[in-house]
Amino acid sequence: MAESLELYHLDSERSLRGGERQLLYLAAHLRRRGHRNIVVCRRGFPLHREAERLGFETLHLPFWGEWDPVSAWLLSRATQGAKRPVLHAHTAHAAALACLASRFSRLPWVAHRRVDFRIHGALKYRRAAAVIAVSDYVRKTLLEGGVARVQVVPDCIPVTDEEASAAGCALLRPPTAPDREEARRSLSREFGLPLDRPWVGNLAALVPHKDQATLLRAAARVPDARFAFVGGGPLLDDLKGLARSLGILDRVAFAGFQRDPSRWLRGLDLYVQSSWGEGMGSVLLEAMACAVPIAATDAGGIPEVVRHGETALLAPARDPEGLARVISESLQDRAGADRRARAARKALESFSLTRLGDRVLAVYEGLA
Image 1 (cartoon, helix red, strand yellow):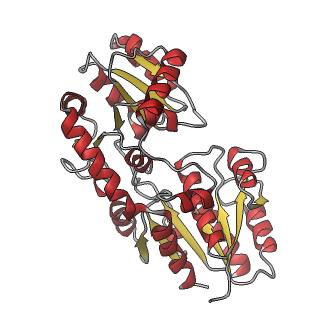
Image 2 (tube, helix red, strand yellow):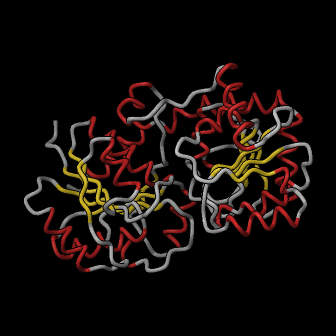
């Protein structure tokens, strides 16, 4: 067996969203493979608390701006004497920090790109020893920005009890009939959703590229359904105002951030991803694991996760009428929606934590 690695996972975010969950999944898998993992994050924020709950070492930096020389120097000092160290930047800001720290310490570093936005400041990615993109679509945006050495490794999810145990989380699986009924009754009491109507849900931060505005405009065209937006973000007031102007505020629940969104997946009739920009959409994997039918846009890497007509129904991005059409079809043809959900769950093996975690490990082994 090769000598173990010392892996420094960098993430300066103040929240615990999909990218941070992926960081922790990966670190859990690598720990199971015998490697040391240090989560480099902001002290006292959700990622720090969750990393400590899971038993990971943590290193705290001030993260004073993207190109923070103090944080870079502190990071390089912390890695002195490490055996086979690798820096792994999980966000764009963290990539700048890793780039600068590597100038001090000559450490190999990996950049991870989970969004499909056109890159600004490609220099930091060009200096990485390797770049990981979560989809071929993201890879293409990087190549167009002049970044080479890009490898595609999709985001993942625990798909077995062993993987879930290693990751310190409950295994997501289709709910039993009693579990589904309990989830719906609990959510109905809490958020006022009627039990006799279909529930359509979106689990995402309320930020521009998730485009919940288009989903609200689609909701206005599907009068029988009730819509739940699970997540917080800066657009909450704007989206509430739009729902009010569309005359559908009484058919919409804004649930805010939920520490355990899985109960929503147990209760939904349909999951909808309305993004106009999406590197991959790891929440789709969670919906697939729970066998929730999916309707989504064709933005970014989404079609690499679910296939139109096979495992989901897709509509063009920024098209409320098209999105309303696939929502209505999914709700009206329950047999077809259930068939696609079962096929999606079978496809989940391609996104297992073990399979994709080992692919990231192979990237590290090629550098250290």
